[in-house]
Image (cartoon, rainbow, N blue to C red; front, top):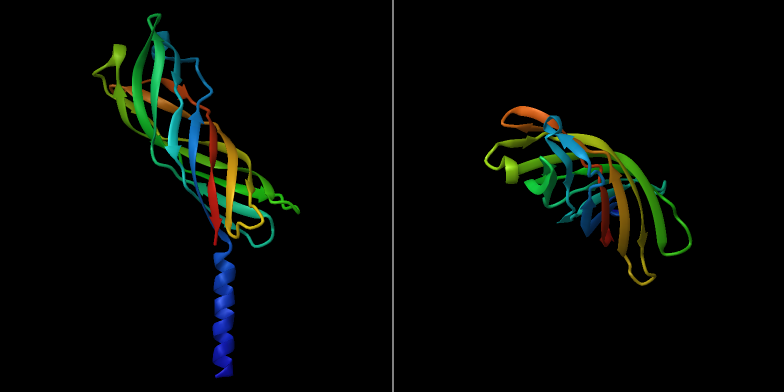
Length: 207
């Protein structure tokens, strides 16, 4: 009986320790592209740029015991963007699209004696475009944006008040190098550089 009790206690402790390594974060993000001088279709389309997008962005994070290291996977509901450009010298909307940007970063969390925990991270992102629609001078044509892969960096902090138990709030910023090849009616017309900043804030719960 004693042996059985000890085994059950060890399993419970192990399970609790494993659970405490996980954190779920729920927030909202603004994705702000930085490139606004893309040239497409052999110079017919100039100053092409993607506008800001907004989305609900949950994430899952795993902490590697007390090392300060963690891995975070950012997920999202679809971002929607308009694409504007100059076509033969005239400014106009030429397309809109949706995309998903799953991003995985390895992070280091700087522990200290306060409720603030700053962190930095680096990793990879994927931009998965879909529902591309054309407008303006290219309305009615078929636009295809290719899935893009790129590097991502991250900096931010969590703040846990003394009486918050497992809850905290967080704010962070990511930067990603992302550019997508475009095809119009099956013909490549160039590469759309986006290279966005992603600003996120929300709540976190550590199990």
